[in-house]
Length: 513
Image (cartoon, rainbow, N blue to C red; front, side, top):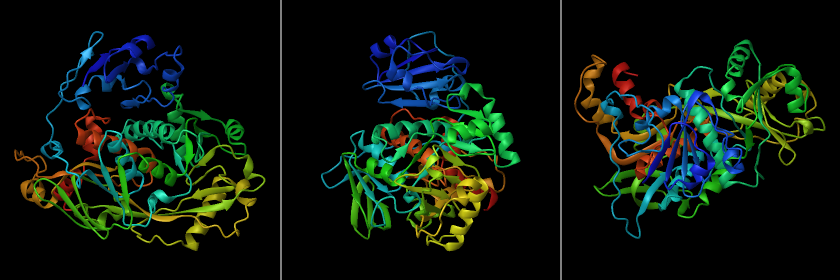
């Protein structure tokens, strides 16, 4: 693996001529490169952000571009641990990295010799997280089995008719903001790769409306971040009305690269990658490691693989191994309504305390409810009325001209979440053994420990994406697969630790909750 790096954007000629698999480009002063002499490279900059790494694949043949804001360029070991980097310019000085906490140190993945009847990786769950994980594995030449308890893929939270891809972020540099911005661009580029014809998604933008005082302040602060004006910009009520095609009384923040999309179509496109075998009606009842391979027992048979990745979403509390981790569940229901003469003018998705998408095949999707600790996935009339009430607040003109008695029913499902509303992604420690090894943290959270973390061998997780899975699940899939295959990773050390599943166990030891 050859890695070239520049301390400022090189010319397009230099990039195209570089004989390296990975090309690192530092972005000083939060400024985008000028690659206007190469339309392909220039177009690739549309979703670049300055909170974390930008990983651009399939832009140049057989090369991956890493566009790194200044702080990320000073911490390349986060992404390229112990790999030799060949600087084509004067090197960017690197920061000294503090020692990793024991429970965040990642185990070394091992691939045993794969026999004919053995998969490289078994993925549990066929929602957006599982499908994206399988896709990333398959395009690296791995043979993958995807198991799902339902009769078809995208049956749970990923089964919504229309979802929105944008990033509801804070103006502050939080871990969640970094993840959402990095993931937003990653998913946007994934869409263009797996569904280039845009038959099941629309790149018409997303308007996040100033629906209350807090959102008005937040959107105003984000609008002042001029370095991201190619991603989002503040708009007045008049500008918002012009962009949306319907009358709006408030301005907001316009995500010009934002899209509406059909999540089941994205899942299907990912699972269609060569090398993936999908097995429906396979509820996992047991999983065990024999010292070389994982044996996954399901209602559809026994599957054997070198690695296992749990992407079970809301089924995680009832899935072997990951059921030992504390998750939260949240019920959500969306609604559907036939397009009216007036709503046919809606050009962009509208988002506030609820959302509505432009019509697709004559039908709008809107919602959604948010009910913590409710595991029901049945359609409810009370939730339908709740969504209609929220739509009235979002845009009264749209609401009053809809006919809601058309018999259309939306999608109800349960989402999986964690206490801090960050996904749970990475290598899986063994909770019972961790509680024994790190028991003294209950007495003193700063107690000095030396014992290595007891991990499940070759076991990983990519789950708990809540209502943000379209933006977060694909980049987390890329991270897990990079860990499995020993490649550079797309997430900073801060994000690796913030998402690590072991954080849940350590919190339980320290707090007892």
